[in-house]
Image 1 (cartoon, rainbow, N blue to C red):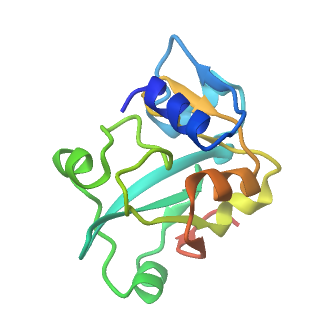
Image 2 (image 1 turned 60 degrees about the vertical axis):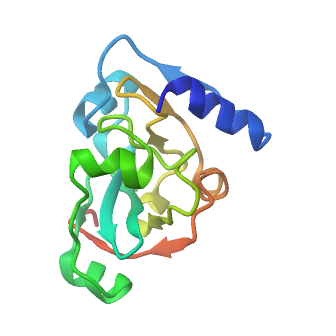
Image 3 (image 1 turned 180 degrees about the horizontal axis):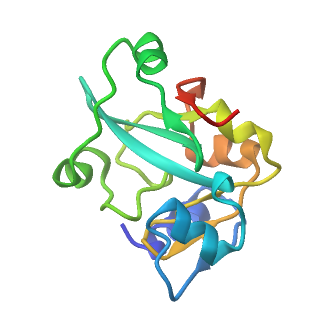
Length: 156
C-alpha cells in the first residue's frame, strides 16, 4: 500500500486529514517518534495477528506490549503475529507501512485502551515514512474499528 492509496481512502470517506511524509524511516516506534517529534508512546503501532479468517489488526500505544493472556481471553485464540509474507495476502499491506486504513475488505480492526490516555496519536499512513495525527475518536471512526479492547501490558 502506498501513501497515495491512504490519501485516496481518506478522500473516499470524506475525511479531511493531513498525511505527514518524511525523508526518514518511520517503520519502527522509535524512528516514528523521532520523525514526528513526540514520545514513543504516542505512536499508534498497528500489529497484525493470525486468526481463523486470515488476519486481524490491533492498534496500540507505542509503549504497550501484547499481553498474551488478555489477548486469548479477548479473542479466544493465542496471539500469533502474521508473517511478513502473509501481511499482503491477508491484510493488503507491506511490512513497515501497516496502518488501519484502506485494509482489505473484512479485515477486523480493534483499538487498545492504551491509546486513550493521549489527546492525539500518530498511526502510520501506508508507507515506512509516513504518519497521520488523529484523535482517538477520529482513529476509531476512520479505521472502522469494531471496538476498543484491553489486550496490552506495560503501558500504565
